[in-house]
Image (cartoon, rainbow, N blue to C red; front, side):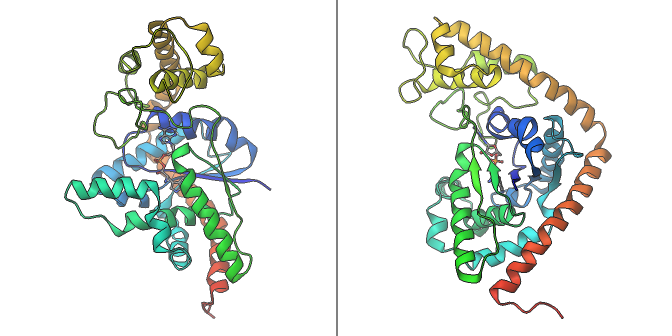
Length: 332
Ligand code: TYM
């Protein structure tokens, strides 16, 4: 059967990109389709310079936002990665299957290690091995599908490679998963720089819509989006990335195709105004639910505790089987 796993890193305030590329589908579709697990991947937040107090705060906030976005702990499993030891246990085994060259080819590693180097910080070894931990996250649960935004598909491909290689060498142990990306808004771009992904850990914030931004801030950021000097509205991701980004965001909010939307608009001003309104309305219920949920931190902690118990029970047999398959003696 289908099993779904995905995760979000508590490295910053969650953005419209996280929501449209991933979280919204988890809540609206994925959790209702199959057994599914959604994880606050806190161990992944330690791969770049971090402040422990901030990671702790963001982990709770991220869990709260997953619930606010509509994940229902009665329907799916919501938990924190560090609460389930199986992730780290399996990571080590997969490090014995993965190669150094494979890790260095990862686009995200190249970008993030370059950034750490230029800012004079060392590159943490865990940044290099990050995709192995991500593979462990997925393979520990026998996930068949991994709903992510476009930027994570390379990591899911690597996960597939590791699963296949492990199975060939040591016998069938892992399900080989596949990434699923949304039809539109799989890569929401920064509103001030449509050549860059809208990312939660970016320093400049005027091009980023955060899920918890005030409605007037959301509207302002969308209305001030950088587009181009061309007249009219047309949908062309290569030639007109700024306009295409707005069309995709509006499309994700309304369900109408970006190309069809482009035909209905004559001017960028109206497109921006309508997109701003649509995003404000999309986020309104999420903000309201988050306000309720964050007033009750014990509720979030309880969800995470129960989620970890369920997750552990699912992961342990698979990870134990991997230990055995690789030739490790099991404790008598
Ligand atoms: P993270 O925390 O960067 O992002 C969480 C999810 O949001 C998607 N996303 C976007 N989608 C569209 N447009 C954007 N601008 C945008 N920005 C982010 C991401 O693709 C992702 O689906 N390595 C992962 C976390 C992770 C994970 C996993 C995911 C760790 N283990 C196992 C799936 C399965 C990450 O950094 O996502």
